[in-house]
Length: 178
Image 1 (cartoon, one colour):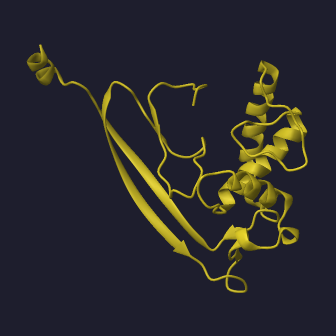
Image 2: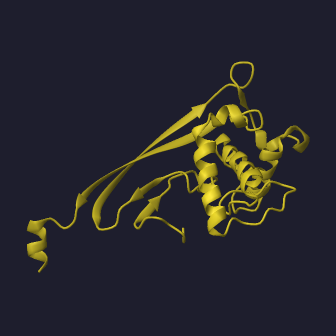
Image 3: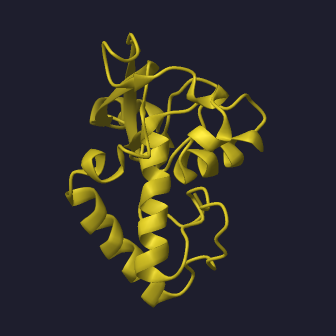
């Protein structure tokens, strides 16, 4: 990201069909020796009436999809890979709507809501509004606020990343570098 509050590397591990989000992944500090471990978990749920998930939401008729899902799928159709729906991404679009209404602008990192024409959040007052909106939106129960329009997917893959770091170089190794 060009506008970053930290130096170093941001690592995001995902399926190739998932668009990276600035809200996922881990930061690795520069100037340190870093080791990253990755664990993948795959979940397959059985759809209603056995769970609350919706199967193949990407293939539903548009009339059955909420405006949030339609906005997300429209954005993903512009990607190089086939669109894969994730409730997490839909929650980001739900947040976009919250920013639109509260700040009268839109985040550039999140898909725009179809049928809206909010300008990007670019000045300091809009950034401060966006920051406050993020804090307020994600301190509430996001699932309760957005789940009616953002159904749970039946198939999902999640990745857990962990990083360990050590100072580099060690004093002993540094002596050999000279």
